[in-house]
Length: 261
Image 1 (cartoon, one colour):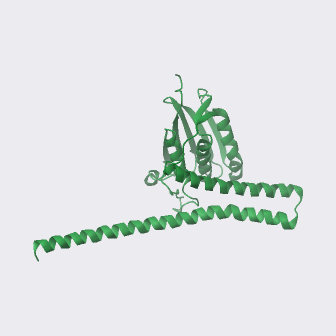
Image 2 (cartoon, helix red, strand yellow):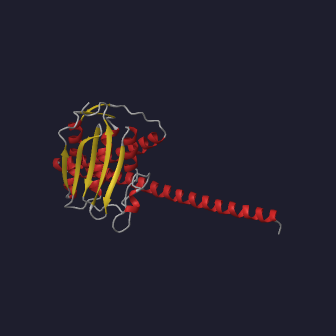
Image 3 (cartoon, rainbow, N blue to C red):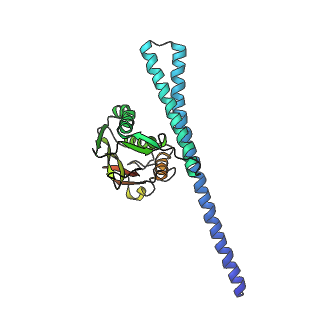
């Protein structure tokens, strides 16, 4: 066999390997897409099933006033859950494409923190998890942030911490001035994240695995959405965690006027 034939044969071999790797990568991406689509469909169907059950009972069984109010509240909760997921899907895509511009305005800092904590308090009670907060007296009175996107970062992080914290555990929200801006920290005493998974935590479609090595049900968009929004505000987000002891997610947001200026 001539040197030319050997070179051509080697070239074909390299090409075959590259094609195989490309095909394997495409198959992994397609499998991930299908898995995430199933998760998103599941997250949309669950509230819808609850809503339909509540409305059917209200229509056909004519419950008493107290029970009717409870059913309507459950149906409303299901509608809000669906709307939250749909908004996250749409806004994540728009942030990725650079099509969503921030509408920054001044939000009252204390009111923002109280509103977010009040929003998750009911879930904390149902799950048997204690909510704590610790805020510096030196926080600025207002934050220059997007009034729709920014609160959803805090809510996503708080709900996520509650999801992975067992009954009897604690979820804390802490804030303090940091390098001319504000540092937010959501800390929990939950299952924790293994070192090999920390680097993937803010990736699109990533879902944290439990102690049994199974992923929690969810779209895998929440933390990715948080990263996009924090970075759009000029901030950075990071995580530290110990398996079996808990997780802390920290992000910094610059202030329009640096604290102390």
